[in-house]
Image (cartoon, rainbow, N blue to C red; front, side, top):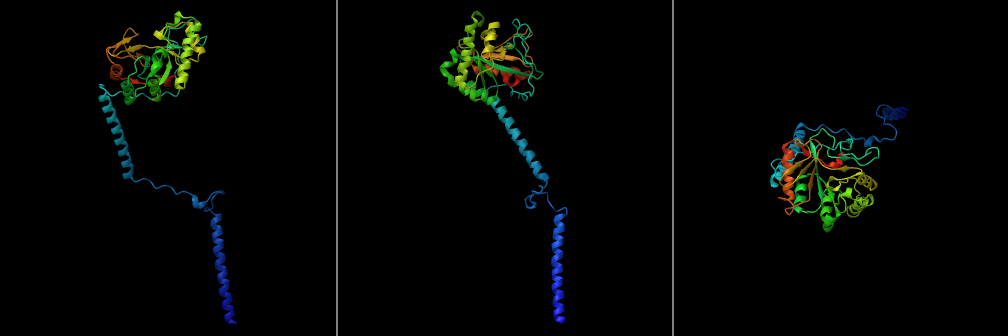
Length: 310
């Protein structure tokens, strides 16, 4: 009997212990160890340990070294192209674009009321930036493409078809470098001397050429010689043009010319140049870029992309 009783007591104790363990496990699951429905405790990521101070210092050293190499590269590039100083870097493009209006004295009758494209020489900004624009397309200098690409100088090209049609590929390479190709008419005529229909043909025809050859339809148009009348702007608007920028300064390979009496550059000024070589200038296009950059950099100006402000 005793043996049987001992055996029973041991069995009861085993059952009791096993039952207690089950109850403890259930309590644990029901307590703060439980996870919200739909989560898997086994898949919860552990917090990353803080990086050691030595690693953080190493990361900062890598960043400083990379910046130093980039600056040394910019200095070397500027020297290679014969610049006196490294060009300044333009600030980021504004999130809110400035309101562009026609410069006083450059309006036609009812200009704003008729919704005609604004004619302007300067973009409203307090930042020390200028915009380089280059007209027509006569000279196709590969060194100019290399120079502006290596120096990362933005500019806008206003093209006339009669000058670019012998080498559309040159301006395609320009477009592939991020340059905006805009409208300067088919044949570079004096537009106020033409009828509305002929002006529209000159402007809309160039829109078609640029769209066919380069895949975009411009919204910027520069009238040849900076001359226009109401018909010019009405025709331009009918062709999809929204802006008619002209210029406040002009830079050549060997000198500058100014619209303002005090011969000073101002924030937001648009600078004109041309695709020209030694046949038309006392120098090359790279000479022009060098003269342009040396002056604006010395006066504390960076070169920005015109389209970023429109």
